[in-house]
Length: 499
Image 1 (cartoon, rainbow, N blue to C red):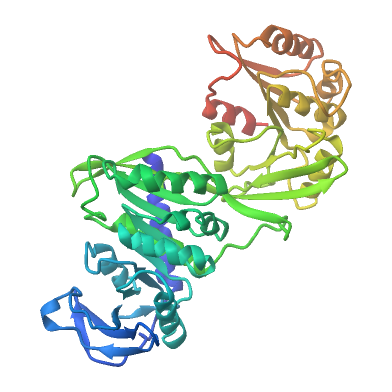
Image 2 (image 1 turned 180 degrees about the vertical axis):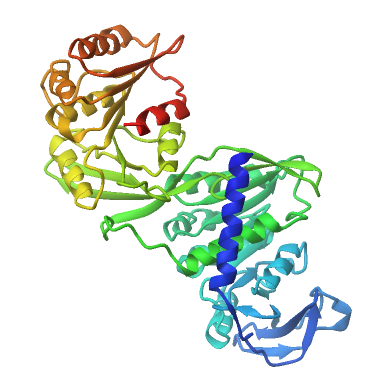
């Protein structure tokens, strides 16, 4: 709960920045008769379904805040105008079911957003409506989308075909067409964050929300999911829409003011995101139920950069995960094995300002000393610490020892989990390689399961030899655990950061 409170505070700060950066400006003007929608000016239009001509239209009084009347050959469209628009004219584009659970739109209007709506499924009429609002009325070219149920079909259908014209998508008990789901990766590639709110008993949760989440996780996109316990397809939204509104405001601000890339990044890198999709739990007072929350906004997330290249060793790729605020001296972890989303020690180090650098594995040769050396030089040339942490588990820990025996003066500490002293990088004896590492006074932090088959053959031998050489070693034995063990991230992080 403490993490959630801190992250909500970050969202509130981002909202404050949005209100400051997007200082108030003159509201865009619209012709035609205006009516009122929940305390704000509303302008209605008709779009010819063939010519796509858009003309003013006065809403029928009996409609109230909604849309009921249809005009043959025409599509109903409308705009709701904030009291004073934020600079950049940000707007939220509603996909369907106008005026149903409108609480988030009301709050966005208070923050200077326009609300746009078109009463048809996504297609060329949507293109014309977008052009009308962005080109003729100066709206932001990257609207935020809101879609409930069938409305999400339209939001996704238009967005996957215009991924560079979207700031973010809020989908609620979302439906999606198969052809849109097949292209959803385009949104992740274009860094479009998603917010999905769904009832735990909604039939669309497993059918649509979870498949979209799986694709987004695979592609390194940002997707936040809120699941209301014991709720079916209705009601949509949240009675208190603050989490929705804060999320939209923060992501529209980010889309309008993208962060500057780190200086070590060039055009050869592709950007994605790394975060742990762990669940957090919030009590919804107004609904009198609990909500499961996961994804960015409820867990820390980090920019991830990958570069793929070809060499005489075959195709390889390197990944750098950047902390949100680098620690002084730019400490970093040279990690020799792949990193899944449950790497709690690395996440603790990211939170402390460490970069995580995942070494390349080539198609033909595995770990290659030359490539490790090139990466090391590239990073220290960009101000990274000259003594990274080496991290590896199992046989990957052996690669750490192999590189360290050739570069002992370039290592701050070796963190090894159930180490196996063999390597694809060198044919030299790694146990004998402990000599230069000990002479350089490199501390070793080893965590092993007492039931690991290699515990006696490798871990205990490392301990005996390193202590015999006068080296500093801390061994943490996980009693009753084998080769795949659980670690205590706070304990490990505290040990590593003291070196």
